[in-house]
Amino acid sequence: MERNVLLLCHGYEAPFLSVANQYAALFKNTDFRVITVFIKGQHNSEVVEQCGADEVIFLDASSKQMKGLKQQLIKKIRQLDKQYQFEFAIAHRYKSIYIASHVKNLFVIGVAHIDGVFTPLMRKLFAFFHRKNLLLLGVSKAIRDDIRKSLFLFDDEKVQHLYNSLDFQSIREKQLPRDQARQALSLPDNDYLFVNVGRLHEDKDQKTLIKAFAHARDALPGSKLIVAGKGRLETELKSLTSELGVTDKVIFLGMVPEFYKYLKAFDTFVLSSIREGLPVSLLEAFAAEQVCIASECNGNKEAISEAGYSFPIGDHKKLAEQLKKTLHLNNAERMNIVGKVNRKISQHFTESAVRQYFWSMPALKARLKK
Image 1 (tube, helix red, strand yellow):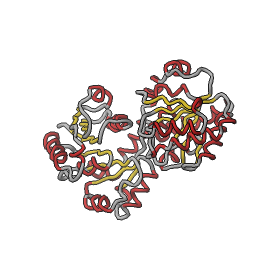
Image 2 (cartoon, rainbow, N blue to C red; image 1 turned 60 degrees about the horizontal axis):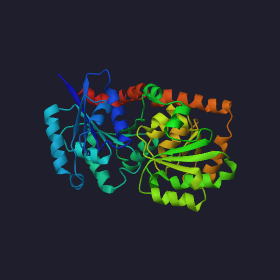
Image 3 (cartoon, rainbow, N blue to C red; image 1 turned 45 degrees about the vertical axis):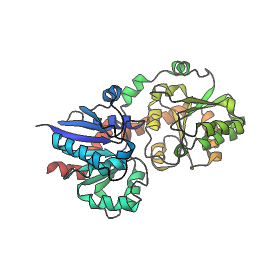
């Protein structure tokens, strides 16, 4: 008899296609079949190929359907449950958790990717009402602790963490060598390159990074800052580079598909976010054995601890000091950092490490025994 699992995702925009693939990988070599359902987004054959599921369904929900009580979407998931008789569901982000939890008797593992998901009172009440069939995961210990703080009446065993993971061997096989990657992106051969990857958005705080780079420019000879991504702040960020006199030193690459392939082009990876769960882009930089600098927010702090450099959120002067520090690392110092990164990967972020932790969670084991 088939044992089906529902993997319910808000959409497949970056980085959530990678997340869908990560969670499908939890079921490798088991007797479970993964049915991945994307609430938003039209059918896409490339997504089907990349998400690693046994079946993929696209609901292509409208913005109107995503608002309010979401009755139409709940009805569709109930119909799928009737068809597949899911043993349990994994739901990413709050709207997916809300929809899946309205399927009668369906055990739902809800995954929170940022802090504050259960801060609103109505969400606290919702989670408490559905607590019998709900196991909540944060993508870092910091997010887990934030959920526990919000839902203090929950049993701690029902609120756990599960780190994001990558197939590091596969990622590394696809990453281009330094010179080829620079050539592919039309980047200068000999400059020292700092890189930031992410949406051009307030949460990613590229303003602090640009200010830091400008503040340290006299101590960063022969260096450039590369910003990869698109977003609503693009014009504002470009204006800031002009205002600070670093237009010729900052290159905006725009959106580059599968950017992880080109990460070896760079010398230091910088993540300046004000909030993160556990960023996939940082793990991809780890895969490229990059020296990394990250802001001390949520999951960043856990990931970068003892494996890179950090700075207080929004502090461009402290970030400037870290930029200068990484520029002047010698080869032995870099290799020492790379060794720490690789040890951290093997302990926490490989598919096998995350899979082992997932299947050992007491609340899940108790559910599967029923």
